Length: 118
Length: 112
Image 1: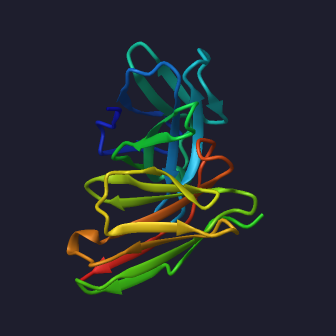
Image 2 (image 1 turned 90 degrees about the vertical axis):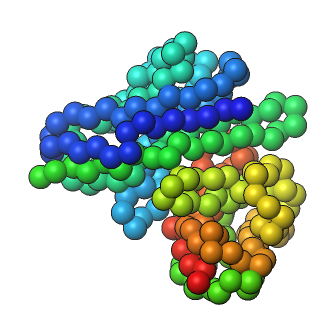
């Protein structure tokens, strides 16, 4: 069974600095998707970044980038030039779709609470 | 384009009662998924509906059920509420299920 592990329940970073959130997963599949979602306090969860497992190039979205290590089953999120608005709970998620049935599994980690300090 | 909406936003029920939560997806999205979020367990997948059919189901007891209407709006029902059902229930919509999901603000259910 697939599992997603976020080993850092809480982290803090100074404004303008860089922080890396860890995520590891366990799967025997070869084709799947990985996501980082952000849930600000009392606000809706939004997608931060998405990575297809078949792509070797690491995904990047402005100040957010990932370090995808497929062999090590690691998918860390790097936030550069941290801003106060980055304060949120961050969830790592794994998704695998069965091509024949259309069914899929979407598994979330338990989250990392990130606080950006002024 | 309007986002995913969920009603009600807050709900307080007592043990043994039942509750119905509603989710309206983004226009054009046919897939609606439901999650239970608790501090200790994170997000747990409940089920997914696509074109009025339940296509995926998580490991929750039969007290948790749902349905989807022809306009893609979805409802989730929890019967015989237990204290442990207190959680934030999130709904997410997507175009075809495995594509990017857009989350609603959630319904916070408190069972006393």
